[in-house]
Image (cartoon, rainbow, N blue to C red):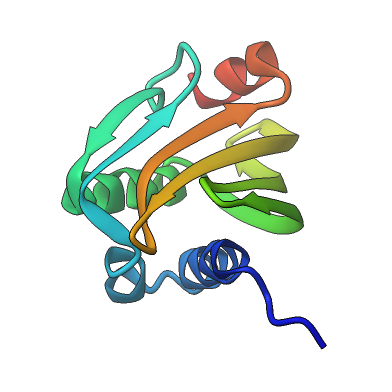
Length: 130
């Protein structure tokens, strides 16, 4: 049996730590200069730099909704990083969201140096989070 690509293992570890709310484990996956970009025109869009800002951003996403769950879909890897496809179900007051997202991870020295989160339907995403 062929062992998993290290970037596949990294992406799955990121996913598991985020799902468990394990900030300590998440922090170990980021380069000290990590940049996390979230595409959109809503209060959660923008750029976070450094592990502490990224962890604060991820906590804000959870706090911005009344209910939030995500389901891992597929993970595609190459020697530069990974692309994670996932689905989010969320509720904010009367608003509900069922949305697919792409998370592009750039990896160097076994750490995430850049993450780009892209909603499949940006308009719907912006309306929900605004």
